[in-house]
Length: 427
Image (cartoon, rainbow, N blue to C red; front, side, top):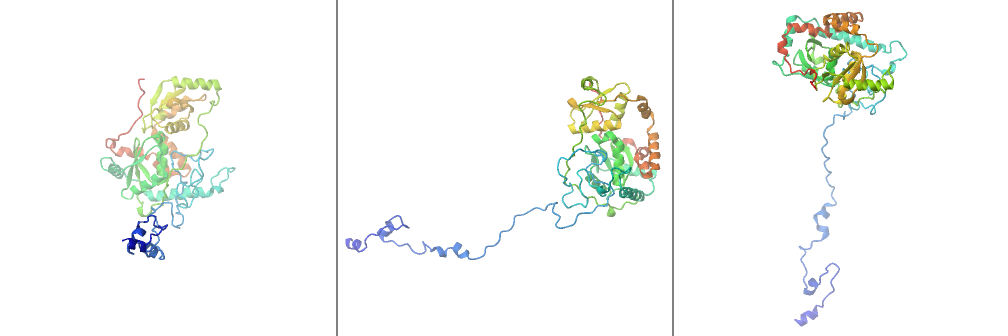
């Protein structure tokens, strides 16, 4: 044993093997346990081209047009988010965001001005002219009037009107379009035409802020859709499509992908009311909070009786207070603006969720009282005569024909869960 140990003197441990056991006992590991690095699978495959990774899944985007051109639309009116809650006469003082089109980039062949997508080039307007509207707009209105008359065809008979109203009752169908606080929106036009694919008429239920001015709601529905309101019971309307309506030739209505930001308008309530001093204005606002509440508005209610109530109250009181607790701030501000324009009156304050309006110094109660005592059909005939002189005869027959057609239908069938303005609380 000693001779064998001397024949193989011990070697220094290499840097690779820090332990000297392998050298001391003369153990050499087989090649299978220590394969060469160049024979490893990774090294062998390193020379080959790797398979490219599959790109991650990307869901389709409605903003990606895929090189397609912008969609044309020949509808002869300006595209707005809401046709009942916005007016072309309201001049904003600024925009809250850049002029991003709510239809998406490159999806519509009309530019977005921040307020609307005009049907004609706005650069053609001349603000110094007596009639700033260009001739192209008047041509579009005439074409729209002729097209509407052609689609509506002959007037409905009482039997046909009653049959259509009966088919649209709640007990017969659940199909309904809800018109809420935003009023008649642009995308709602597409919903109405979709309902007209399977039925000649569609039921529209109106609640909330737009019902303060139902005449405007009826006018905009008929004007923008080209249909005819054949029945009206409170906030429920029956909108008829016309005798010669062809669903395959329905107008192309591009949809808004998001709600545009509302522009910045001048302040509704100023520091001092016109014609009053600062002290008188402060005293009037304090006095307005002390007057009895005329009515309390229910959330998403039916407010058509609000305007006549305010007019009647102005016959005896100069200030009127309306309780709006529970309503969003934007809602009762819009109601105040409608009262200012329709009654008319002066907005005093919105403090403590109350609408306080003043009739003004030049209020003439006899004129307002006379207007209230005139029957509704007389007012309709007078307005029809004025519009017929302007060449808009087709709208006069449709603006308030709904009330006339309502006599052919049973009002008991139109029982609807309508929220009305509640009476004054005992508090």
